[in-house]
Image (cartoon, rainbow, N blue to C red; front, side):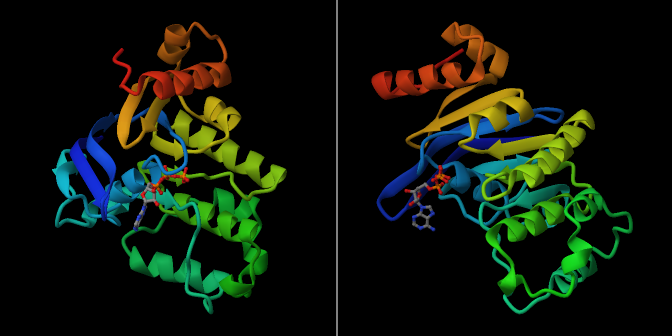
Length: 243
Ligand SMILES: Nc1ncnc2c1ncn2[C@@H]1O[C@H](COP(=O)(O)OP(=O)(O)OP(=O)(O)O)[C@@H](O)[C@H]1O
């Protein structure tokens, strides 16, 4: 459903994505992992059209995203740090988002209800705590029943109750065979929420296969030690693992 072809991106002299190829298929949930600064957010922002690649192409549902922003309607995005107009109230933000998609009449309000966001409709975004902003971001990501969910560090900053609510929602969308991309450093969350591992190191894809294959390859039956071994491997060998 998403294919990333020979993608390269540099910021100044720093080559962040190096000739990157990846395919994300519907019905799977991908854990996108890698050390800080390895290029995970740059990859996600490239898919969202928020970062323009220097080279290569991204196709979503077999259509190039270049010069075409209609594909964005298929994607629900929860950013690592949501940035919103400061004076806007929560209720106004939701109304504004709905106004931008007038053709959609059926909203997914699961998270709006579970996080009780109606109660803060009159609060300005600038007055909310970081975790509450994350709840708003999460609720917006799911609002239009998107086919693709891209969640950048979704549970960071959420309290344990909110984390469990969001995880249950992600599980529900997985069961509905949505395509889900999640970046996180919290391995227990990734183990629970994904079936496919993508490991990025120094701008390259080092591993791209099912979590079961990763466990086989590393002879580990638990996710965390399998990832730890993969990280050690990449640090020692510094070349992609072909499976
Ligand atoms: N707009 C930008 N201008 C300059 N450098 C940038 C920009 N965006 C990202 N970078 C650099 O690109 C590199 C990759 O950043 P990116 O945010 O993609 O990493 P990440 O894997 O998501 O990291 P983290 O795990 O810390 O979130 C970093 O060195 C970062 O400083």
